[in-house]
View 1 (cartoon, each protein chain N blue to C red):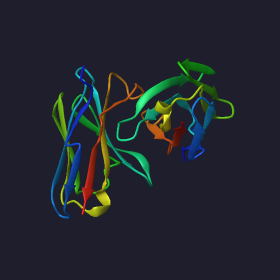
View 2: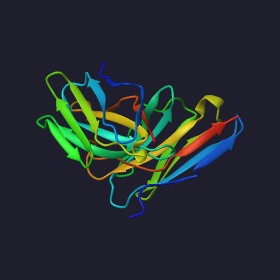
View 3: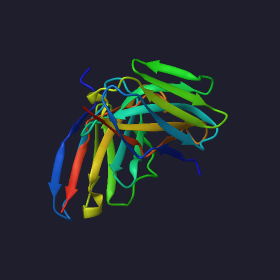
Length: 113
Length: 114
């Protein structure tokens, strides 16, 4: 069964610190992998998209990495801010079966001052 | 563009009542999706449309759930009769061209069934 597992489930860090969120998937073959940020009470918003051939992609203080061989992705947040407090969801697109999206359960990040 | 617009934002109803959630996708987006989000199960796809036609409704939990898209700018998700286990946040999302395109989510409708 195609799955997306995220870790940790939740994380608390101090403002200004860096953190890394993990995403392991079994989806194969896949088209792309996206990281979404979901603020409390809001809908998810796409942060980055990575295709099979990409290793790293940055969006401001957010840097996503992808290792297609080990089926792992990470989202690194640099110099965290209070506004980074949110749920971060990893979403993998299956290449077959109509490119169905497989969602991870998300990592809840809380940045404290 | 105003983005995906959902209404109501919050709905509290009693078990057995009919609930209708509404969605206006981003203009020009050919795909529209209905998701349900709970703490236990995360985001689950209920149904999606392409050019107003339902393509995959395998995620609709029961016959109590139905969705329509009468035109390119409006969709509804109806639950009749509602049950307490239907309590969740329901998201509508739209995308531009392909299933693998970026999803643009609305703010969600938080449903509480007492």
